[in-house]
Image (cartoon, rainbow, N blue to C red; front, side, top):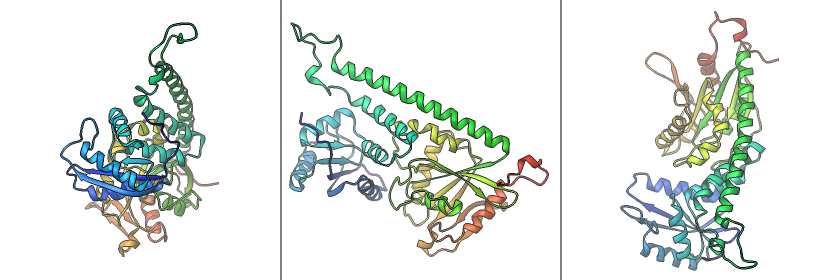
Length: 375
């Protein structure tokens, strides 16, 4: 086994086509992910297969080709746009003599770079340790067998067992700390419920423009950039609609296809803001050719966290890129189901505010406590 480098800044990207209709879009998305991780893609290797190879995922011939590309480009990491098993990852590293990273590890690395708050760092570390737990096998072969004799007797357990025990302790500690955060958020939500303040969570595919919309609505200064997973830490602000209605709006982490389950589980405390929201603003990049797939992927994650029953309002963002005018889209009964806006230019935001009043304002017969006015 070779010595793993600490960093890798030049990568060969490997994308295998198993007959998916959106393969080309998947390659482009993975390239954006690698770029977001501050890694240079020096070459992309593509191939078509019926099924993954059990040992090397790509097959021996293709792995030899990848190795030749790695040597020619002097790359120090190979990134697969797929989820690899621990055995496949180890076999590939032996064959290629360089670090191999799968899609899950890549996403976790981006999250680790973007985490800023204490809560965000806890959640990312928990997800990383959960992923690492499956990759400890034979990670310490030099101490895996205990030896006898003076000075050579082991501590009673192998280094692998020691690692697993220490990792388990750290995971328990992180879960306890996140449970404390969860209780704090629950207390805050109960306070908002007592005051009758409506809550709104902005969800959507990564880089759909959620943070830009959040800033345009609330005049906040949340970080927004044209890159995947620009937002990691949840931010909440009060949005003043009119004299009768104000809303707590939360900007949340973006979703992506094949989002690691360990990441969803680790961010459950943050995503509970989405579960408990009165309504979701589902932001969709209407200029993206993959918008239908993106909607489907977001709804999958919402179902996984139990937020599929929360009312949604679709926000078709970036309409200026398509040359489309802002518009409220209603169903046959006249209920607003979607709004077409441009969060960057601000066009259509007045229509969005009108729809929020329609969907969230209490009826005139409601008690005065149900109306929330900013101080």
